[in-house]
Image: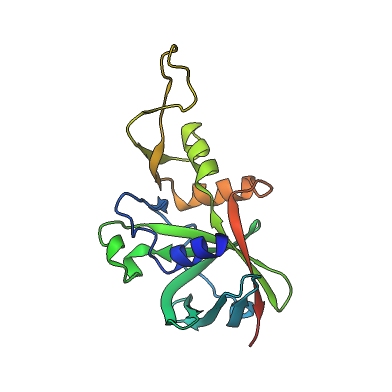
Length: 208
């Protein structure tokens, strides 16, 4: 479920399974330079499955912002996570940088880097968030459009092969790290503005 995937990622529990590895960038898209007043306030997830999830967004010192995610679990209390972020404003849109060194999650203790989201403000009271998809990033690293490192799982046989035929092998990417400079990351995002780099969109509506 998209909502659950976003919430798990946002609450920094994406490494709850030991074998999982988040896609990280060594460098941010940019350094903190400005906040966005239009983001400030309280936003409710616009979902059809009765999930009560809210984002409380407020400015912080040094051109950063705080995002407090609150999930109301029916009969199970609240799930609350606060994440400091900083924004990158490009011609291609508005992006969130999350520095894993500022996260309380134990799973990120030895995994430093930045996680990217994209924000699309639809007027004063509508907001869309989307996560960076690893598939186009893997392709970009493989063809040299971005500098990065790919860690592979052990080769596995492709399913559906006849027993009479030798099993073809394929590499499965286990971990993706973008190692390129902030400048080149910005150029990459702007050059591919019309490509679906960010997926799993979630829609939010302002309530305050």
